[in-house]
Length: 64
Length: 308
Image (cartoon, rainbow over all chains, first blue to last red; front, side):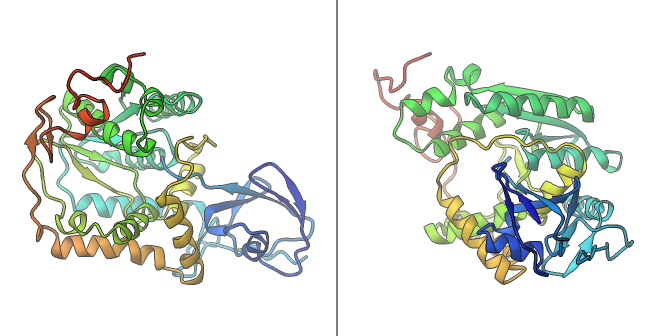
């Protein structure tokens, strides 16, 4: 799976049956502070993605 | 294929949101409906004036609030007006002010803007550069006054703000850490001077608010305020998210804790009555108000700032 991070960097991650939440935690990203998008559709963080998926992580900015 | 699509509990459409506390998934329509229903519920507990002001920075929270209010405006007994304060923060505020103006045009909501430069003679950037005080403290004091001036100019007695449940939880913990019980026990006393503040998103999480703005097509990936780099609120926010992940509902409970204390015990502490500031005449807790102190008007014959 390809993970597009808020800083525009992209990393390859092996899913191994894990949810996006677990994957984000393993990357040191708090899933509560982000929204997750796949093919321009928002999906919940407990989704188990495909190995071929491209997942975009949108950081929730604070304030406003 | 390992993918297991998750569907809405209410209609079986693709889910966009997980309510971690309830373990319930919602699709975009039901998430939006849920947020709008919460705002409806909240507003029914308030006696709304003829015109409701909305503190509108152009950020995601106030944008989402303005959108919700525009969606349910036919049900409201009041008209809505958006109020924006331009603090004067170079490289940040221009984009957010532009976004605010565009949103108001899209939603067909009247929009009024007041600028620090016009009201005080200085931008926030200028005031911060000449002061040792924290930028957020200076901004908070001046922004509150600016919003009041704008509200009074347009005869607005009530202002809705976009503060969400996460903001409330953070404030609860910050008040506890600083031991500031007076803020809690003095309650929500009405004031004939200041417009009454209401917070329709008090029980809506930051994630729900952000999703609402995004799903409404009004979310803009705007920069964060450059002055909000490090603060106690940031530390408290990180701590609360850690708790929320391990104990779903912790954020909601923290937010409601202070709300409940205020409802049950608010008013048991009686703050001193406002005094008129000896410089500007506005009400405050001391002989010279915070605004005049920030502007250096409390020091006779000595200006701490120089005009731009």
